[in-house]
Image 1 (tube, one colour):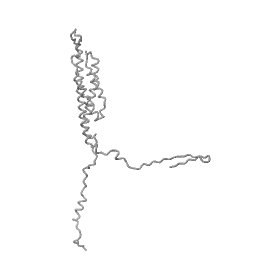
Image 2 (cartoon, one colour):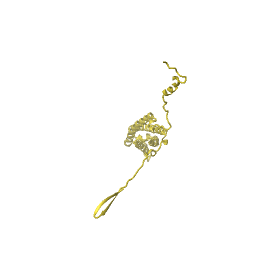
Image 3 (cartoon, one colour):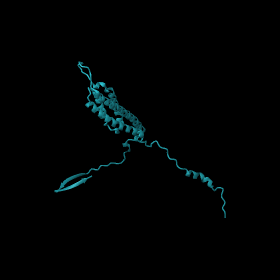
Length: 227
């Protein structure tokens, strides 16, 4: 016998909202304030890599040119040369020995040393007087030291010009790296991170001391251990 539906019996359509609510996929959180920021090494990777390659190549070429210029000045048949120029060459050769990996500290320090010394090379630039012999008593006129000296002088000028230009490029590249690394460090918001001591695990530390006392009774020695 067929059963009749009561007026109070809930219809299937009334449960549809509950089913629809259960079928809805949960929405993933978009992020929280406590989410850890990216490390500094994750920012500006491509520009920092390009600048590091430029610095490495320019520093290598500059080192070779400085060594060649230093040798030619010392062993060339010049009448005289500026000692400040030789000092600038030696100083630039010393600064290349610093590794680039020391990052922000050297990015700030190296330009302050490289750029002034490279500027000093232009101030004490070699000229034709290097190949003219002057007599200080002025009894004889100045004597030109010949085309060989001028050819050597031209080679020194070319080498020093390229070396000084590359030195400026290295100094400016370090300044750009300083800005990029400083911005990357700022983006990490390191000042909001808890100190390592704040995450030190809690617990209980106990100390146990054992004292061993030797006493003699009736010619026998007994060991007593007290905790």
